[in-house]
Length: 236
Ligand SMILES: *Cc1c(COP(=O)(O)O)cnc(C)c1O
Image (cartoon, rainbow, N blue to C red):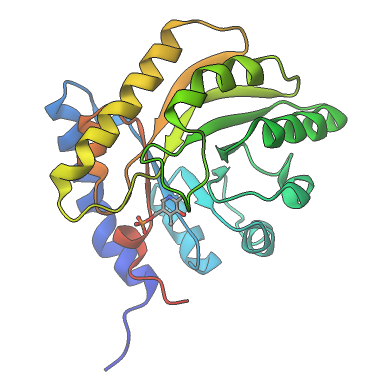
């Protein structure tokens, strides 16, 4: 018996996920085009990523700098490239200018560094602020009560533009348990969107992964990051 390739798995799953996203969007009065599907491509071979892009994927996200760099030149197709993983300060210089958006900005210090390196290159980098919505000790991200002052402080940094928020909520046994976390995120997002702070455009609320993207969309997410359901189980 031969293993199914990630290309085969993608071909089987992509349309189903597209339909699911469409249905979820419509259930809250939105259309398919209101939601961005970002393919989380960690451990996925570049050939499969190129195939996915040819098939219609417009956004991809890596979560390790080393892996991003090793595949970046091999992804020959036109696509929006995001960074979605934990970013260490010493690696920021390797990706600024190479990704369109850094979704996982978890501290003011990291935002300042991205800003500084972007200015040196004469560019502006779009960022999302990562929120640790479950206040989990082993997770990075701003805590709920820190986010308002963080948005204000980060809005003053040159070289970056705050485009929204992202979160990875706690692992929940039942799908319904995750909904309150998504709802809290939506509230934080809307509260800050309404403030109309200079240099801050709260356009994207990035939440929802393979197991919960439908719930996330129903709670107001407009950017879902999907790996396993598109490409199959990851083997490290
Ligand atoms: C891997 C990853 C995802 C996708 O997770 P799946 O459960 O495989 O869909 C989403 N967001 C981030 C930050 C990731 O690292």
